[in-house]
Length: 131
Image 1 (spheres, rainbow, N blue to C red):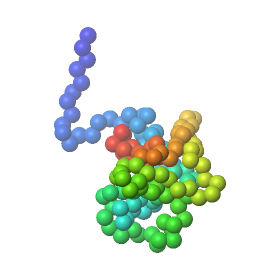
Image 2 (spheres, rainbow, N blue to C red; image 1 turned 30 degrees about the vertical axis):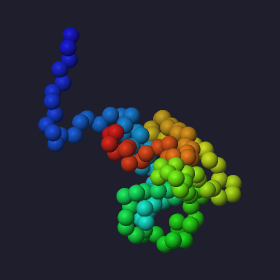
Image 3 (cartoon, helix red, strand yellow; image 1 turned 90 degrees about the horizontal axis):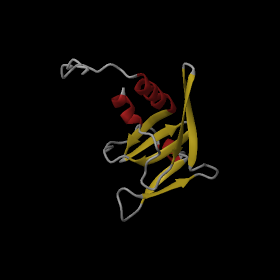
């Protein structure tokens, strides 16, 4: 048997999926974009605050520079590449850690880590697209 699903009008939103909703809630509570500007972003992943590149942030940051300087990890670009570099960590800051989120009786745990290509392992901006 073939199941035929009705076609949604272009501007109609699809039914939310429970897992996507959970991941979206996880991303918006465990991951917070604190500020952007001067081609950088300041984000909190659980308890760790990172400072990394954001090519589209052409404006001035809202937070004072002291807040940016307190980041636990800052990404330094490789002079030969726009995509690669290394993370400079404050003393005692791990390069891998876990963040958790409880939704009802389910706990989501994600292992995050700093990579040489500037990512952390979760993309909070994509969470709203998954829902």
